[in-house]
Length: 69
Image 1 (cartoon, rainbow, N blue to C red):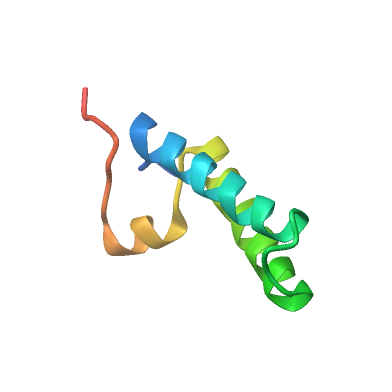
Image 2: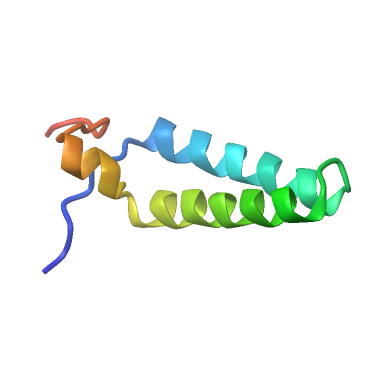
């Protein structure tokens, strides 16, 4: 069973850009180690949801930014 995609292209791009910023904050030393690790994990979650075009929270809330055909 595959989850129905609920992320539009613009939201997917925004998620990847935010993930890059969050991960960069840690690797460039702008945040302490513990906070940086948490931001990196959050960034990974954002990248994964963008790749899969599915956000579990949006699924629970029945929100979709994907254009209907």
